[in-house]
Amino acid sequence: MTKTKKSILTFLIICFALSLIFYYLVAARGLLESVYVLMWCPAIAAIMVCLLYHRGENALNFRRCRVKYTLAGVWIPLVYLGISYGIYLLIYGKDVIDGNMILTLMEMPLTFLLYLAIYFVTAMGEEIGWRGYLVPKLNELFGFKKGAFISGVIWSLWHLPLVLAGYTSSGLPLWFEVPAYSLQCIAMCYIMYYLSLKSKSVWPGIILHFIHNFVCQLLLDQSIGGDMLPYFAGEGGLVTLAVMIIIAVICARIYRRVDEQQNGGI
Image (cartoon, helix red, strand yellow):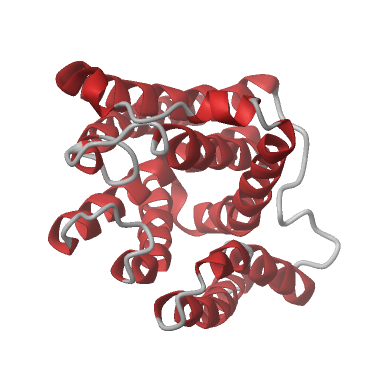
């Protein structure tokens, strides 16, 4: 077994073993706040693996990158969330608007800053492990197409206990939420896989994950309601999923075309 295979296997064992503790706290004890620590399990696992296998290497990909990739981490989630929630509002009208979380937070600047910090730090915990460490290693073994799919399957399986425990649910039946949420994880992984490889940095993934969670979970879901919202928009919504898949396909095609041009020029 190669060093890369050993390190990936060790990372996954440590990550899921640590995560089991917090799955239990969420599902059996109802300690929902422990999810904040759960989101740092991938980072802790990655750091431990780096100490075992990658001393002296920048295996977590903490490096500066071109601004366009960081900006992509901002606008991509705004596009798929804006389209999905926008379509929902066009169909159901202003009656489903039940608040304005943006205005509420602006009136409480300290609370606003606290939420920003929480969402950013928790997103960083996941991304250090998934996109900072795992993605480059999977790409070494499998390339873009297989590597992105495998990373998406792993990420969806890591979230699955939370879905089954009802942490991510908005009242959706599991027969709908499990496949929809899993497919969304896979599509999102293709996008972040692309950004991570092109930028050679963990930062675009952190930014995209942070913007997605902050805008979707806090700003929009706390401002827009209605029984049909979870089916249309947000995490697991079909319109969100459809737009994500389109962006993921575009990323895959761009990466393949650039890769073919580079290989053809050798």
